[in-house]
Structure formats: structure tokens, C-alpha cells
Image (cartoon, rainbow, N blue to C red; front, top):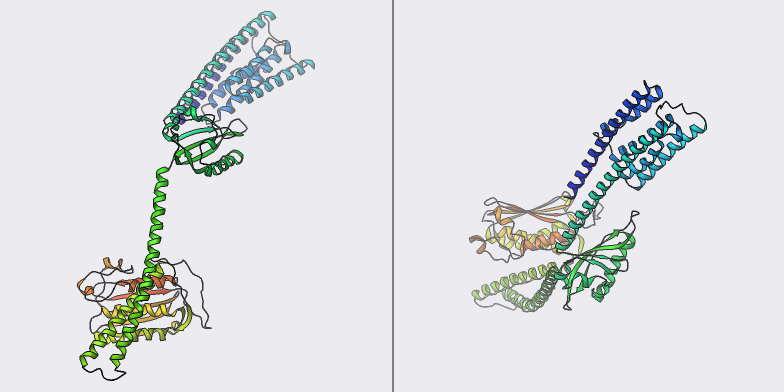
Amino acid sequence: MAVKNSSFDAKALRRRFIAVQAAKAAVGAGLALGFAGLVGRPDSAETVAIAGLVAPLGLALLGFLPISLDRLEQAGLILFAALIGYLAALTGGVTSPLVVWFALVPAEAALAGGRAQVVRAGFAAAAAFIVVASLQAADMLPLSRLTLPLWEIYAVSVVAALAQAVLVAAASQDRQRASDRAAAEGTAMYRFLADHAMDLITRHSSDGRISFASPASYPLLGRLPAELEGQAMSALVHPDDLGTLLAAFMNALYSGRDGAVEVRLRHRDKHYLWVEIRCRPAPLDDMGSATDIVAVTRDISERKRQELALIQARDASDSASRAKTAFLANMSHELRTPLNAIIGFSEVMTREIFGPVGSARYQEYARLIHESGGHLLDLINGVLDMSKIEAGKFELYEELFDLHEVASSAIRFVSHAAERGGVAVKLKIAPEASQIFADKRAIKQMLVNLISNGVKFTPRGGSVTVTAAVKDGVILAVSDTGTGIAKADLEKLGKPFEQVEGAQTRAKEGTGLGLALVKAFAGLHGGEMVMQSALGEGTIVVLRLPFAVVGADGTRLQSARILPFRAA
């Protein structure tokens, strides 16, 4: 609304300027005709004067162009002063009856603009009068052609000047009333906004005392605006937050920058509530100096309660995570001890180290106990590794090693299961990838998990292939000719304890930690795991390790990390 009113006022002022200049041109034309009737045909000097009388018509036409109204008004005042000086020079100099019109130049400037424009108009009128006086002193003025008696001309000139002064005064009063009305409307609008704003608006003097408070003080603090006015902020702010608020006020007051702080204010019933206070300096004079501060205060108690609840939930989650990690570590230790004994003794019985067991069935049972114990130990180790990774406590021990040797060891680890399932396991490692720099145990565990999955879900007669090459890092890939995975299920895999639901997967043992560990280990190495699969077409899992490449001289090519890994 303010923008529209401002645009409307600017258009109205321009229309008034055009109308005033057109009226001046009409009066000037009338005076020119009257002068020609009194003295006859004008000479060259009088022709210039007549042109000056109708010159405001040019200013009126220029008013239709996108030229600054201030410049047009300034040009009009200078033209007015010059015209009066020129006419005075033609009609007797300082004794001319037109000299009194010099007083109207600053008066008309007051109607058109502010103090600076009045001063400029006064200087212009004074300069024109001095020029006329100087020419008269040098006896350079032309003879006046006025034929009427001097007192009659003076009378007509004074009456015309008085009429012009009355018109200027009336127009000035109209403009002042319009300005007062606009100011009153603006004040009423600002008052309306302040009275109905939900946020508290306050004005503070340089010492921080409140000189104005909006009615929002009552619903916010339980205090009427009159109760707040004159109070210092130290009487309302929590003692622990006073320094923060004063620092923001001082910064706004002396640095001229906006500030925002979160502090606690005391309610009328003695409890404190969290608020956000945004403050900014308030310019008080034309030089832009600021001695007051305007502040807007908003209740953020609910947001603070939510933040506290989130912090408490985060702390509870961290505590639960630490408790889970400690529990898993303790349980892993407690379970490993008997499991190692079970695995060791069952292996002794299976190999009949101390003599025949007796029945062949006992030997088969011992073998099953050994395999089950080994499987359970692998599960426990996987859970413990995943808990360490999630807690950010898993450390890599990187070294230079033979990838072919580690991959062959991983294949031997699953060779028994592959032979029983009739699945062929192949190994293809490019020469440039035979030596890599990484965590040897993590690489072996990733390969064991991927090859085991490939063997587990590949039907008899199929194959699992392990390949390694160098392209923007070490690329490890494990592909199989198995049953494949549906596209919708690929997104689940790689998350802890996530498995694809299906009759075939339910028939296989597993916890869903294998791929999650592979993904986590790849991330710890600064790399990534990518899976590609389709039902009935097999699966390929690609591991990209960008910092594991070793040069021809046996040194690592890259040693930086991109981003720290975070488990999903």
C-alpha cells in the first residue's frame, strides 16, 4: 500500500508541476501581448524577454518525459530568477517595479522542494539581482520603454506579486496538509501493525532502557507496555544471558550491524521463557547517526523444548548404542571362549588325534559340531565388527600385500562348500593389481563374504569368478551365475541384518551382515560397493578402492581419504 501511495503521490506532483508551468506560460503570453500593445513592436532584447515569459511551456512539455522532477523544478526556479533579472534590467534595473519579484523565487522553491532547494533558489535570485545592479552601476542597462507612470507600474507589480505570494502560500498549505495527512496515515499504519503484531516490538535508548513497547508485551511477558517503558533489560533478562544481550545491543549501536540472540526473559509470574531478540540500529537524523535500537522479540519456548527433547533423545540413543557395543563386546568375549574350546575339541575328535573315536557316527557328529561352532564364531565376529564400525572405533591396518595370495586363501576357505554345491570358483587378477595397499584382513573378509554368497546362491554347475584390475583405483569384482536378485530388493542389501525374502534365501543360513560388512569395509578404505543383478541372470558385486593402487616402484600412488565412512 505504501508503495502504491508513493507512486500515486509522485504522479500527482508531476501533474501539478506541468499544470503550474503551463499556467506560467499562459500568463507570460498574456503579459507579452499586453507589453506589445503598450509599447509597440518589441526589439531584439524585448523579444528575448517575451521568449523567457513563455519558456515555462517547454518545462511543461519536458515534464512528460522520464526526467527527474527535482531537476525540472530546479531548472524552473533558475529560469524564473534569470527572467526576473532580465526583465528588471529592461525596466529600470534596481528601481524596476519587477525587483519585488525576486522575493518570490525562494518562496516558490519552498513550495517545490526542501531546505537545500530554497537555499539554491535564494542564491540564484541574489546572483541575478547582483548582476542587474552591476550592469546599472556600469551604466550598461538599456533605456526603459515603459510609458505608464512609475507609481502605477509599481502598484500593478506589487499587486501581481501579492497575488503570486497568496497562491504560493495556499499551495504550500495544501502541500503541508497533504504531508501531514500522509504522515498521520503512515503513523496509523505503523501503529496498527505494532498493535496487532504477535512479536513484541520495543525501542531502546542508548543505555538499553525501553522507551516504547508494543501491546504484544502482555501475551508474551504478562506485562502491559506501560510497565515495560523505562525499564532496563537487566530487570527482565536472565542473569546468565545478560552479557549476551548487551553485547548484541552494543554491536548494533556502535557497529551499525543487525544482531540476533536467544535469551531468557522473566515473565510476570516469575518463570523464564526462551525468546529470540533481533535488534538493529535506528537512525535518528539526516546524517544517519543512531542512538536508539529497535528490537523484535519472538517466543521460541516450544522450539527450545523440541531441541531439548532431540538432545535428550540423541543422548539416550548414544547411551543405548554404547550399551549395545559394550554388551556385544562382552558377549562376544564370553561366547568366544567356550566356542574356541568347542571348535578345538571337535577338531581333535574329527581328526582322531588321540586315537579312534569308535563309531563312525560319532566322528560325523564331531564334524558337525566343528562346522557349527565355526559358523557361530564367524557370526559373532561379524556382529562385533559391525558394532565397531557403527561406533567409529574400527581401525584399518593398511599394508602392502599380495592380492593373489589373499584371494586364493579366501577361495580355499569356501572351497569345501563350493565342492559340495558343485560350483566352480575362478580367479583372474591382472598383473598391475597383484600388489595392493589396504587392510589385509578386511580385504580377505570382503572376498570371503562375497564368494560365500556367490557359492550359496549359485546352482550346481554354475561358477563364481573373482577378478581384479586397476582403473581409477583397484577394482575388485565377484560375479556369479546364480539366481540373481530382483531390482526392488537391491536397495535393501548392504544394510545390517537385511536379507531378501524368499523361499530360497530362507533355506540358506545367514544374518544379513555379510554385504553390510563388505560395504562398510569398502567405505573405510575410501571406496564403494556397487551391486548389479537381475533375476535369473546372476549377480556381480564391484568394489572400487581408489587409494589401494601401488606403483611399479612398490609405493602407494594415493594416500588421501575422500570422506570418513559412516555406516548406513
